[in-house]
Image (tube, rainbow, N blue to C red; front, side, top):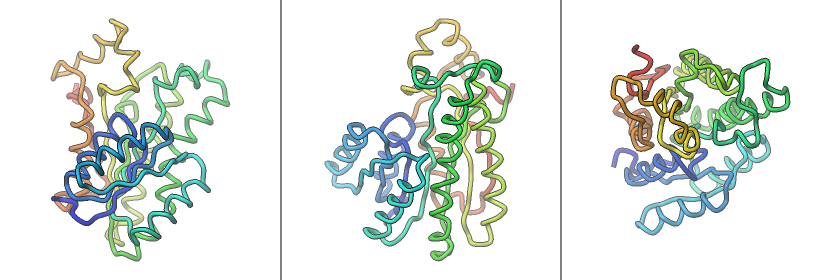
Length: 255
């Protein structure tokens, strides 16, 4: 029960890494706020957690919309009066290729570039902006930002995604420096290839699948492995850690 009695907001908690984190955080005693755009997925995760006798609340959330984020934070404060943990997990990647072009910089339309950054980067900025003042009043909290392997090494072919995830890494560092004096810890996870809906179609391509498994551990990661990293950073077990950029990538970044 490492998060017993704590209130944790997890964005993009309706599938993949966010869903795994929601289940794990609830098992560890947290009240889990499922901030998810997809209503069906979000409600399903809420119902699953509540059915186990644990606490969860679904709130349909567009992380790129400031008014929506304000409404989310106000609702959480009205119900629970505090926010202890934020996992800024929501993002778009290869699974959104039908909506946004994932390509090299010169072949990325400006509209797609802006929308990808609005979700992947602005989403982190907005929720953090409205949660940090609450954490300051509480004298503490933990914010975990989900970046990507793309944020720390050069991975061509999805440059708007890469730019957004690199910015999340840089933002994590400055947030850690700015807000450490308020006992607010800010850390970042950089997953490699994780078996989630985001890369499901890509994994069907033999060339991509081979590339994704050409790491020292010779396999694709599991959502639960990212969730356990997030749990460590959310809990008091990491109480002296802030500004950490943690690859969860099977060793790719060590090569």
